[in-house]
Image (cartoon, rainbow, N blue to C red; front, side):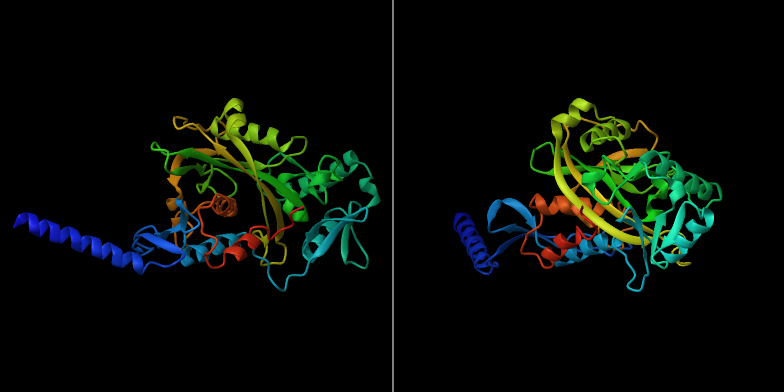
Length: 371
């Protein structure tokens, strides 16, 4: 009797499984449903994970709400008012930046001989007293920016020089160099490197991402979560040399480890108008291109903060990273890290291309001047 009952249960289970599979969507197979938690009480959860019918060995996400959250995080870096009026910053006929009329006025009033208006006020340019060489222009612009720093108008001074050019191919022969903290005041193109620090789980079935907690003394985004390594692209360094330098300084990753595991992975770009004086019409233009790199690290590697800019490191699963994209998540990652991470999740096949708004996300990841 017990054997007959067991056989009945087994047959019933088989029928249930067969019935469930017959109702599965043609394109995707649901593998688990994660209950949504109330954001104010618990971290938001991803709704659905699915297998793609294109390759049943790879786990893809197909979740409309996650796509909305991704767009929310991308749009944080791309906030441009529709009614904003900007003045082109032009030198030797090349458009190098964008400023508001009030910023242009302040620069001209600070040093009328160095910054001047042209074309009936429709453009900002450098005056003859700035000279026409890299050295003379760098020195002239620096004198104005240092005066604005000393008056408290420019904050977060870094003593790090950025090359100013109208595209990346010309950064080795820039028009002039500018202090990093002042670059957005002129709205010039800024370049940087962001590294997705990756490790495989102990069973080699899951990719995890190293995250960093920024120091509370940082001038921008103190105590926020960040990439394991990220930095601006200064003058005089190649991208790879800068990656090696930043990896060593920020996370104690040796040159050998970096060269062994690093992989260039394209770019993202964004453009926004912000700053503490944007309401008064003296905001700054952030026009940024970030070169993305993936760095696979050994399972037993533990990063260490060498430059005082990081308080701690930890790993997150990609699901935990996805949860943090929810608009109400109370401890999110620094805004400009999200486009880099989202780009990684798309190109590495963690997001189903059948997902709604997939192409919109791809397009928005390069909303700024990718040049």
